[in-house]
Image 1 (cartoon, rainbow, N blue to C red):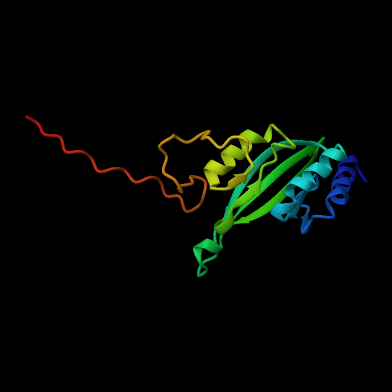
Image 2: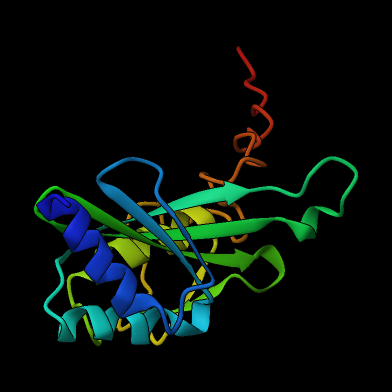
Length: 166
């Protein structure tokens, strides 16, 4: 067993109490599906075991399949941790109807910028976030319009003002 396999095996053991599923998309990667309410405690367990560092938070929009109600779609939060060449991704699936997840800032203060972007771009309510001000979008950006959701089709242009010549 190489060092990366050993590291991912350790992560799998640490996360076993909360994991709903495991996948190995590549040799040096482990994806662990967690219920949203287990995210913070799982991250605390990784920290206690001194397993890796938080590298990024990315979002993934999973709209409802054709024929289903649009509100049946999900947003996934992918919390990436690295230890050497090993990459661990904690995946939390959030339904459109209740796209909420607890902030990790209490555990990992540097998660703040990632969480703010995740909130703005995907419409996820990051609970207990120490800062909810806009990071990327203009202050006058319309509410409930999330540019990274697949349903986003751009903003409607206001009608052009008539210009009188002359």
